[in-house]
Image (cartoon, rainbow, N blue to C red; front, side):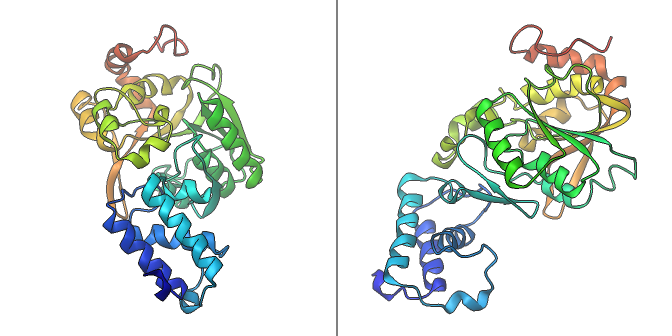
Length: 316
C-alpha cells in the first residue's frame, strides 16, 4: 500500500489521511491533520519547517520513507502530540525545544507579542515585564527577544518546566530574561512590573478528566484549575496589584473559563481581546481597577487557596 508513496507530498497526504481515519485529536501547536503530517514528514527528512511548496514533488528514498512512516505510526498508536515527537514547537516565529516537562507552546498571546501588546499598552513604557506560569519559557523569551530593552522575569512552580525554560533561554540567547521558581507571586516579594502576562492553568476538573489521550503526555499541573477553571486566575487577580506599577497592566488567558469569570465578577471592567481568529479567553485588566475591586476579588480568591500563606500578604 505504501509502495506508491514516492514524494514528500505523497507522504504528507497519506499521513493526514491516516491521522483523520484514526480519529486523532489536534491542538498542540497545530490544529489539523495536514499540518501535523507536514511537521512530522519534514522533521523525519531533516528539512526546514517552512520548506517551499516546490519541493513537495521531490522523491524520497526507501530509508527516508521508513523514517517518516515510523513517526506516523507512533503518532497514531501512542497518541503522542507531534511537537513531542519532533522535540520542537514554533511560537512567535521562534523555535522552542519542547518535551513533556511543560505544555506545548500554543497560546494566542503570540499575536499580542507580535503587535507589541498594542493597542492595550497605549504607548506606556515597559521596563520590567513578568511571565507568570512560564512553562517552557515561550512567552517570557519571546517578549525578551522582540523587546531587548525590557527586563523579563519568567516564573513557574515546576522545577522541570524551569529546566526546560533554561534550555530555551540558552537556545535563543535570551540574556534579558531571568527565570525564577515561585508559586505564583509568593516568591516575588518586592518585585514590581509594568506588564504582567500570564497563561495559567484554566481547564476545569471535569474537562481535564475528559481530555483526549494526547493531553495525558502534558503535565497535569499546567492544565487542571478546579471546578470552574479559575482557581489560579482568581489568585492572580487578587495579588497582581501588589506587583504592578501604578499604571501597570495585567494580561491573562483563561480560555473557556471566561464565562465563569464574567459571572463571578461582572462588575470588574475587563477588556476581552479579539484575535484574528476571534475571542479566545484572554483579558486585559488595569492595576487601578484591580485595586478598586480588590475586596470582592479577594473574597472569591481566598476560598481557592490551596494552603495557608500562599500569597505575599494583602493589599489592605
